[in-house]
Length: 225
Image (cartoon, rainbow, N blue to C red; front, side):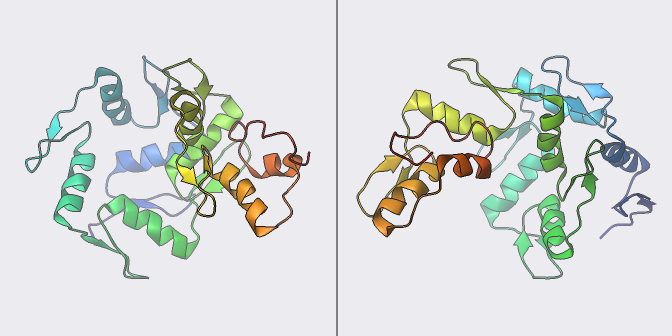
């Protein structure tokens, strides 16, 4: 592992470059000074919106020499090539798990240490991954940057948009192994399975409390409220 002389006084994370430490420190202070002019998404480092802009321009300058697939970021290309070749060069020292990307190894290591270096400056809730904090912050800001192409409805999380999209496509990927009934959401299948197991279903009110807002629409009549 290369030398990482720049260490965060807040959480102890170390970095090879001072600019990386600067960007990381902003996850603690809540400072996101660089914004995408297209969608308003904010970033801690000026290099991040450059990569992000390619989502809007659809520019994919990094090409796989094995299959021709194109990518917006060099790191995505490297991960793709390692996976294609079966290479997993990043080994976890604790459990021995081999991973394609360095970031995957870092995230895996935190499952062993319990480290949660990314903290919400508004409420103090901490996360092991920066992406988790970014999504969580939308609870405070009300930001819903993900839009349905069919009807324009907006969501804060990709998973919520995926579930909503199935209302347009009619896709029902979750199938009951007992009777073959299909459902658009895993939560709906879990409720349906209780018919076969005889398990008393949770009241709908408690089911909604357990699931993220917007994921569980009104269920069939007859389910206990």
